[in-house]
Length: 398
Picture 1 (cartoon, rainbow, N blue to C red):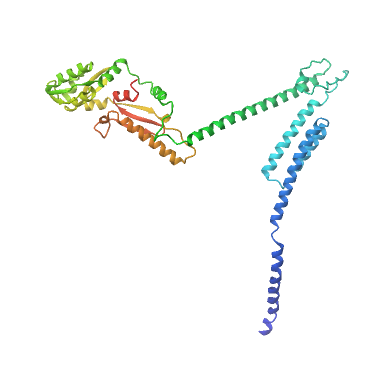
Picture 2 (picture 1 turned 90 degrees about the horizontal axis):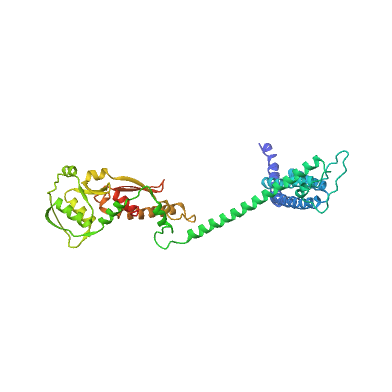
């Protein structure tokens, strides 16, 4: 057993000693990756500088030696294709720029190339004062062959196309600048806090006048609504329903129609006694509603007249209309999160719905009436189910 263990001791000792001495050597060697990256970065900078200088050289050579300019650009393309130091996106971008330069050199070189000489035709001396291909194409010269004319025409057409593209690019740049300026101005306006809890757009009144154009009142209906606002005296003590209605009709200056069938359905007669008294004049609308409410009836405006009917029939005569209010929601601020803009919209809708339900409060559901109003967020509109009288009021008595 002693002989078996003895050879292992020198081996372990040697391994330990090697590890101790190898550790500092590895630590001194370091990680070569940063150095490689730095060299690649320097090489990429060198390639970009070479491309820039080569492009400038090609354009300087173009005037006197188009062939050499072509070779310089061709060499730059070969260099970029073989290079591995540049990022793929940057290499692709530089290749596209140099390739465009090469195409421009081809086009301009074809303009400057002397026209081919036809057999039996003397060469045409070129005017040294003119280098514009478009002007050369416009000079009629019977000595120039058909092939030369087609070459000049093609070059002139290509230059005209390039000029149009440059003009379009400039126009696009100007329009983009204007739109960017307008967008930034809108952001600045949106960042200004409102003066009150809720601000309507400056043109809200004009937009409201154009809203729901199908709902228009006649002169007779307008006169009825104005008559319902007139102050009247109410002092009735056990007077018949017919006499009360006649008295209110005379004070208003409008006819009030009693529907006999509706009276029968409500178990009311023309002689039903009415007792009602106000200490001071009230609006004809308030007086008429109170008189009819005491006998379980109401009135509607239909066919340009005030018609007394039952509550059930009045509900059947209600109409549903949709009113767009998206233009009253205010400006959505891109500086605020979506939840803040949603909260602002909900707050604005709540204010609008409250204002609408303040018109004849007792005519709305939950307050004794049957009218309803809801908000449709998809169409940015409110849906109102009410009598024609309330719809007329919502449209500003138009």
